[in-house]
Amino acid sequence: MRGRQFARFVAYACVGATGTAVQYVVLAMLVSTATLGAVAASCVGAAAGAIVNYLLNYRFTFRSDNAHRVAAPRFFVVAAVSIALTSVLMTVFTHTLRMPWLAAQCVTTACVLALTYTINSAWAFRSAERDV
Image (tube, rainbow, N blue to C red; front, side, top):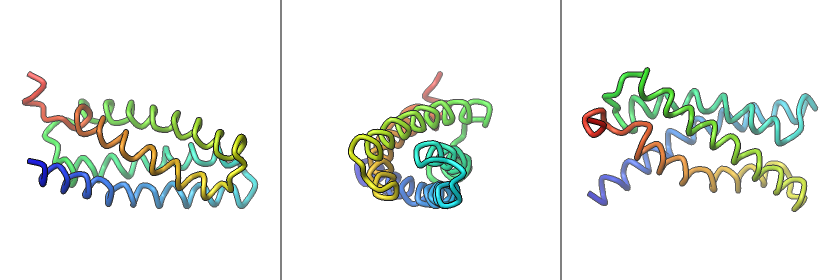
């Protein structure tokens, strides 16, 4: 069972890399054009990446048998929590610790990854059979 869980975490991280790429592109565009500051731009990017992550995780990582009406609200609750955490961490890293925004985003991404995997695995994409 440990091997299967590890393989699923690796798949989650790989799918997450796609959503993270979307997030970083949005973040870089918004910051480099001075449209938004790093914290707000990171959150907007995270929301865009969450949509990509939901679709890919539903289909490939968890092969969910839950209806979208069950899985999607759960996933996006987790995404909202992760965006709030992203906001807090980016604020601390960029404003308090004066880290460059890209370095701050990399550290933030690593912190949020483990938390979202754990919650999504245990709740958002949990098999409907286990909910009975």
